[in-house]
Image (cartoon, rainbow over all chains, first blue to last red; front, side):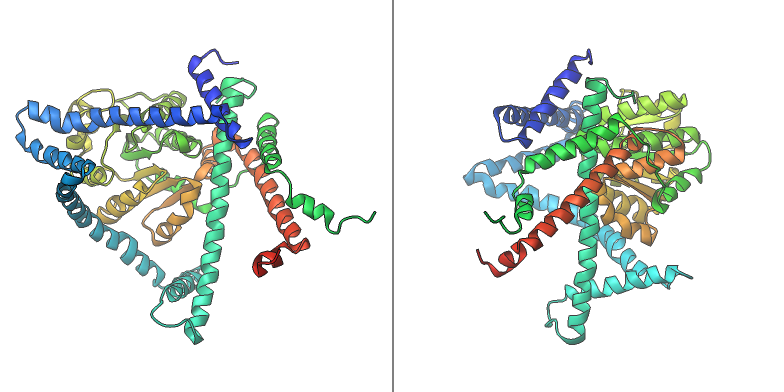
Length: 205
Length: 284
């Protein structure tokens, strides 16, 4: 067994959380509340050290008074806490949304629309790769057809939309399979922690 | 007394789900205790990621953003260790950062294991810049002025005094970006690092995310994709090392088998008892 207090605390909290698999109980709720509280406290401390102090406090101490502008915008957000002042929070949000859109829209179009359309329409790869290219193109067009709701899904459009549903189903299946794998991985890692780091019956890392 | 029709299948449908939890737990623990070391075959996606690192000239800087927290470290920590070891083995110089507040301790743990295994030292062979809040804004800043964004590294040293950082000014100074991510931060690196600044990039993602990023692999926006613990195991196999990824694969395979059997059994029971017809028809 481990002689490390931290490992014992982690192991006991892991077992508290696992106890929920039997049924809801105070041990689980204790671990859950502890997690929420500790996370919030940690996040607050990290954000103070990492954001507020270097970007506002230290800058003001050095005489860089432009830092007052983001500070004021940040304080205005707090206006949402009271009904009478909630309107002024929109000024900060408008600023934020404007900046974010300006940054995100062009890069989103470039990386996630144009590049993907170009890939779907590129010349077929030679040999067996052509089958893969054809499937990509077919999937692309049929799924687009499914999401085109301005015309009824009848005739050729209906057939294409139905094919699109099949492509979507395959994608959902693959995604679900990966999700199962991900969740099992998390369980494996917890088991490795309990059996290796805590109890010590597995070989070391 | 006549036996109840479909009695077995009805019992299957009525099984307490806690027995399934026990089965999954045993199916996970047994292969860890008694490993059979099932073969792990690297997929083309992981091989491509490996090849991308192999193609970087020795001594080059690589930018590594390790963006995850303890909730998904099971998948990404083995990946980080394997990729870091690969960089060290190739004598590359990783400049590492994280965009998650709880990430630094995990990065330190991965660096400790990888640097000890490959005999590398902080500041001579790698630099850990620490955590920076801001996600997309940080990724944008990496394309402009890294030292302005990180005036000090994680341990408090001024970055303009670190010799490795003298070459690191922006994305342009890195022949390869490596992002191991459990969130949409991967999108920011693809949009900004790979697409806007045209930097070659490899991505490590959780298994849940992996399918979302296949299109970027197909379009060439990322060179390789390492997905989940399985991807980490494949990378370890390519590296010829045994880490937590490969150690977990026996359990992963057995639990998948159990899940497949349970899904088949559940569906068979539903058909045999006419449950599907009842659900579709809305009858009793």
